[in-house]
Length: 126
Image (tube, rainbow, N blue to C red; front, side, top):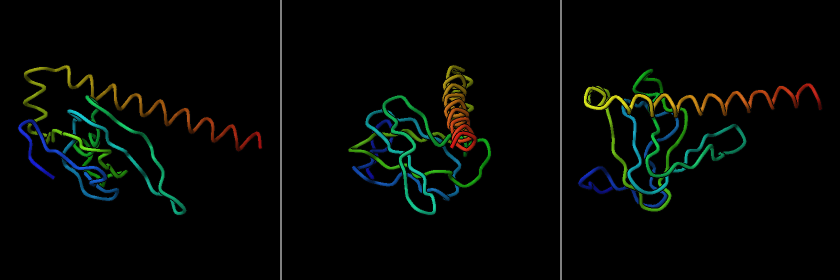
């Protein structure tokens, strides 16, 4: 990992954080791509691939629970780390970040709702 002027640069396949790690910061992708994965008892699967402007790890700022997934750099990626104090400073200057966080979380909830509905449908209609 290298320090950049506007964040940190992670190299290809470098782990940003692991599922189960304690987290207290969120991340903003300044450039590059990040793969988010989760483990099941039988496999590890890709949840999503994020890119420039996307945020991730934001749940840790709000609930301080262990990370629910692993984040890994896909190629070189520049990432800005935001802790709770910095988040509040940014929000005071420009509250649009709050909307970005809410938008991101809403999209994830909708995706999970859709997946849950599909699982229920498959269980009812084998």
